[in-house]
Amino acid sequence: MAEQSVPRRRVLASLAALPLGAALLRFVPARAETGTLAATPACDDDPTPKQTEGPYWTADSPQRNDFTGDGAPGIPMKLTGTVVDTACTPVPGTLLDFWQCDGNGVYDNEGYKLRGHQYTDANGAFGLTTVKPGLYPGRTRHFHVKVRRPGGEVLTTQLYFPNEPANKTDGIYRPELEMTVAANGDASFTFVMEK
Image (cartoon, rainbow, N blue to C red; front, side, top):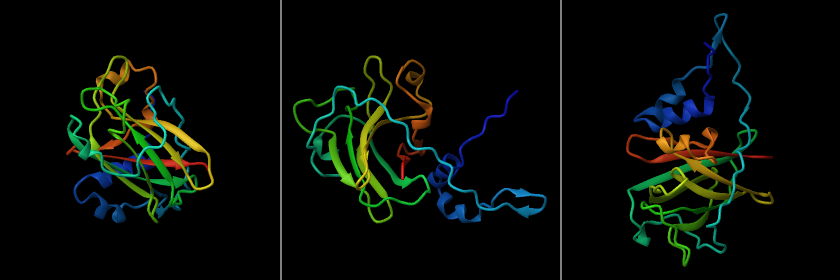
């Protein structure tokens, strides 16, 4: 049976999502070989894959990081994360434009419900308070996002929830775009942008 490897960033992100996980990360040693610690590995993360924009993007979304004032149905949740380059250096000032359907699988195509953009902070971090997207025919749960580092090109992609039954039947879904989801339903993701 072939052994499957789990990307180091996914393991660390999962650990960070657990209670006390972030504090324990500083005690996780590098893999030891022949009794000595291996050198810290170079960042080997591949750039975040592109995906289709889909038919529901709207230009000129408002700048905001909280969609809960929209009154859209759905389970409240937070999506947090960072934007880094392929050398794992945080990218401050990156534009992230999010849009999604509500908990019933409905997009607002008349206004800006569940739509908005924000910029990463000095540490490349972002945060969105929203509701968990619902399902609609042919699609699993997902967020849409356009990511543009200062002076860079736009990355259009989608983020997915792990262990969703509809992942198996959604022709667009990609496992590399799964978020790390905590027990409370909050999610995180690290976008890796080309240098």
